[in-house]
Length: 242
Image 1 (cartoon, rainbow, N blue to C red):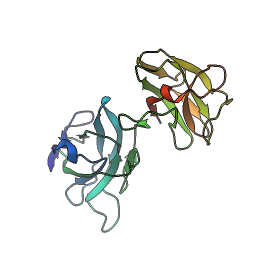
Image 2: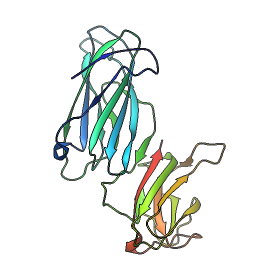
Image 3: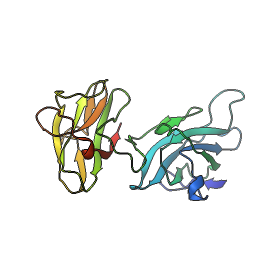
Image 4: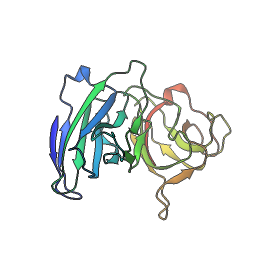
């Protein structure tokens, strides 16, 4: 359990790192927060993950004790999920002088699990997240970046060195991509030889590109319409979404 004392907006009050054997780090994390009874302080928590692709923010949320008789000052505030995670870190920011305690528990999900943050007991998500985030070694020819309407800000992907390149593009639809589908935005070239590819879907005015159905990505052999690439061109892909 981590003891916290707020230092004001934007100043780190404390952080907790999950320190257990790597083979016991779970794909899911339950974040528990405890405050003195009767307080109404607003805290911001940032959840970071360590993966084979590096460290990054999974997302951020704010929490305060719910109103109402019997509502707990000690409570689970969020559930975090990330297949293939290697480590967890939670950073906390609170009002000057506020006190709280942070703890968490973790478990593995044999079937892979979901991805992202689920707010609990009145918490509210306040930032974007990365999605999808497959376990290292999982390579796909197409995938889903948003479960429904949403905005893709940026992303990156990696193709094995044996890959011959091609294009990665986005299609706005709620069903799997098929040959002949039209790209929503001009696709991005994939150099051969295992080079990391990155993209930014902003246009200099708007941050990112809005999808009204689902944001789906695909590895294509052509850049005018979708021609789904051969199996050997599959990629590991992550997109930053809102």
